[in-house]
Length: 223
Ligand code: ADP
Ligand code: ADP
Image 1 (cartoon, rainbow, N blue to C red):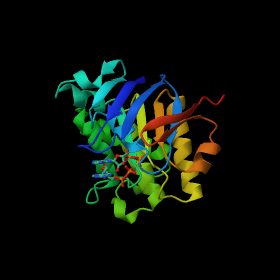
Image 2 (cartoon, protein in one colour; image 1 turned 90 degrees about the horizontal axis):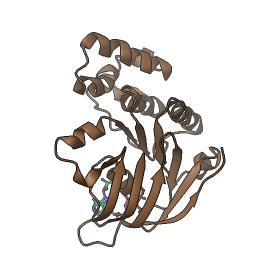
Image 3 (cartoon, rainbow, N blue to C red; image 1 turned 90 degrees about the vertical axis):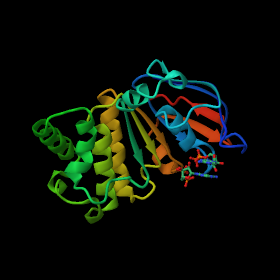
């Protein structure tokens, strides 16, 4: 589903943020990407969703070479990828319904179908009673579940998460991780960048360790 072939990425003239990275994430996998701050985790995710283009090397996502995608093809690729961040990135002046609906509005769904689908997804996450609230009235754990609802509402092929549990307590971490597991069971390929050792150790999944832009370790832990 995701392939990196000898990928280099430099911001301006700085040292390479990614330095000869090669890896494969097969369809249906659930992997963690870890390593110290500045190791290149966010950069790696940005390459997968087409926010950056490699300085050298190839990035293939769902069989498509992202460097060869045109201006109109990039948004089409992004529709098949859900992304969540440590700071949730919800629209503060919109309701939960509106925040999650955005994904489906872009796809041209009718208002009625959007309402039903959003309610259904929020219910799966146990936050349907917050549908008309605005994000600032929600706890961190609730906000992350809304962000996950937005990312997952159109059943993406890939879910990318950048430090998704960084602002959450243990109970909320566990809830967010169980949503990742459910999405993965339904067929979504999941890539989580985190430096939270406990999250990684408890999950028994493949871990890719980055260090100063290089793959330092890649453990395929049996499930
Ligand atoms: P991580 O997510 O592991 O903390 P990043 O991918 O954010 O690492 O960053 C990798 C390296 O690239 C760091 O040295 C960081 O300072 C640098 N970097 C990240 N984004 C930019 C940017 N927009 N401009 C310049 N340097 C950047
Ligand atoms: P993360 O660890 O998740 O990458 P950061 O706080 O490092 O988060 O980065 C936040 C934003 O700042 C990102 O968009 C990243 O690209 C940008 N950034 C990070 N390092 C640099 C840098 N050295 N110069 C410019 N922008 C940077």
